[in-house]
Structure formats: C-alpha cells, structure tokens
Length: 302
Image (cartoon, rainbow, N blue to C red; front, side):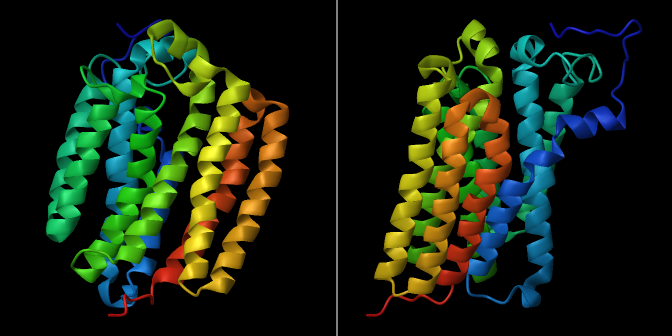
C-alpha cells in the first residue's frame, strides 16, 4: 500500500499533483529526439507542421508522461523509501488514481499515434509496450541494470528519432538516420544509469539491480560515462567516413566538453549526478542535432 502523510487523505488527485506525476521535466529528451528525426529526414517541416506538432506532443507530454505515471505507480513501494514526497506515496495521488491515469494516457497515446500513419502508430505501440515492460510485473525490466536503462535509452532517443524521420518521409528512414539514431540510443544507456543514482537505497531494499546499486556509485559513474562516450566517438567516425568533416569536428568538440563534465562527476559521483544530467547531457543532445543536420542530405550512391 502507498503511504500517506496527510491527516485528511484525499479521494481525488489535485491537478498540480497529476501534473507532477507525469513529470514535465522528463519530456524534453523524446521531444528533442523527435525533432532530430524531423531534421534528419531531409523533408521540410514547414510543409508538414501538423505532423511535427502532433509528434512533439505525443512523444513528450503523452507517451513520456504516461511512462512516468506507470513507473511511479509500479514503483510506489520503492518511492516510499527513496522519495516519500512523490505524489503517490505522499497520498496526493490517492488510491488507484495513479494506475487509472497511466492506463488512460496509454489509450490516449495509441489514439494519437493512429493519426500519424502506420509508422507513427507502430512506433507508439512499441513505446507504450516498452513503458509497461520497464515498470510492471512480471516483466519489470527495471530490475536489470543492463536491460532497464537500455530500454529507456531506446525509447527516449532512438525510437522518437526514428519516428520523426519515418513520419515526415512517409517511409522507412535511411540507413544513415537509423545508424546515428541507434548509436545515440545506445549512449543514452549511460544517461539513464546516472538517473538511477538517486534511488540506490530503495533499489537495494527492493531487489532492483541498477548499476549504481550493484557496482556502487564510483564504478557505475565510470561505466555510464564510457557508455555515453563510445557511441559518440563512433558517430564522429561515421561522419568523417560520410564526408561531413565540419559536423564531425563539432560533435568531437561537444564530446570534449562532456569529458570535462565527467571529470567533475568523478569527484563525487552521487552528489554530482544531478549536475551532470543538467550539464553534460546538454552537450550530448546538442551533438544529436548537429548529427541530424549532417545526415539529412546523405544518400546511398549506387
């Protein structure tokens, strides 16, 4: 059961608590990745502004918001240990309202995804299924420090990028788009690992084998940073091979900025993880957009 610190428990959630449940601060990565897909498609977004706006709303507030509600519902016991002030364990989202919100937003996600055509709808189905597979029993991939962050990285960066490119191109994205989207999705595994630093005690108490809980903060921070850096180095290599030297140089400079941020992180991995997520990750996502512009005009020559 969720715990409550209210003297007079509520029977319905307040709008403010419901908004907090779906965590607007988490919406940016998939919205940004969708925009990267739009840019990388090579198709003018001005001619398809409705699809652009709908996809941004779907990727961020709706699908990502739904995933946050589902995760908080399934994690209510862990949050009662780590973060009892959150909407569900605090009682501000009472009873089973967290579940109903997550289910209603799942249905809304599928309905909106249907309007994006077969590629958009297919990606939405994958995103909704992945959100529940990450959080809910019996699958609960969140228990794994390998599969959990990998799935979230895929859904936060790779899937929205692929979707944006596919929706605007009305077909499968190019080899170049799929390659860089996959590399940035793999690198996002490290970002998601750093996000687990805030829940070490609760993860250990409830059997969630996140990398910080299993390896400890120092080793987990280094694993996360290597995981972020290696795919980006491969992106730079690919851009050089594809004759995009200026874009490659820009991404390399952004990697250098991340390396500086990593040295700060290593001094106090647990204390500096939130700082890195607001600083080093900015350089990461900037490289994504640079790469999107680099590949938008690439074509396979027979």
